[in-house]
Length: 178
Image (cartoon, rainbow, N blue to C red; front, side, top):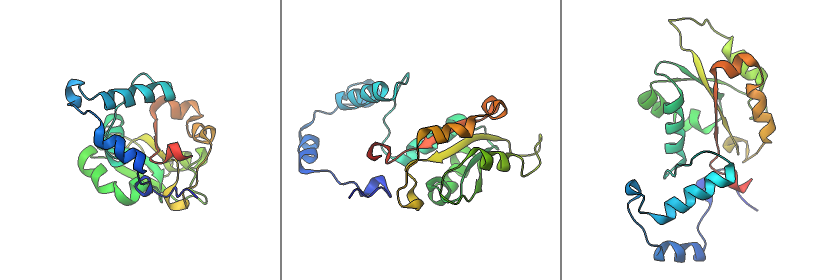
């Protein structure tokens, strides 16, 4: 059985440890670490994206995604039981100067109706935090590593109104296991 609660539960095999011990490393800032270059290129191809960036932790990836997509003082919409709410809310406040706006769902899947409810649940204007990012999680840590189909996440962005001003970020620390 594969435990999908957290990416930290996956331990390297002996074969992985041998590769790690014998790989030639370099300074990634200068493009000298062949392993990083190869991994980023592999991920670009796998996910059909323009570019890829290796970061050491899932938390670092989340913080980079939020900082790059949310203007200071604005809002990230997410589910109450998601990792970023429990473990990263203070980092989001400190590094991105953004706030989280959460709702609890029955099954951990943040759907379009939840996003709409959060958008319209409080006044909006120049003196208020403005929603800029919807952060979803797959697999869902606090729902026993549950995963959901990507087409369900696309529904978060289905209306023209949301597509106009909302980005979407999927935290996927265990994505490859799903």
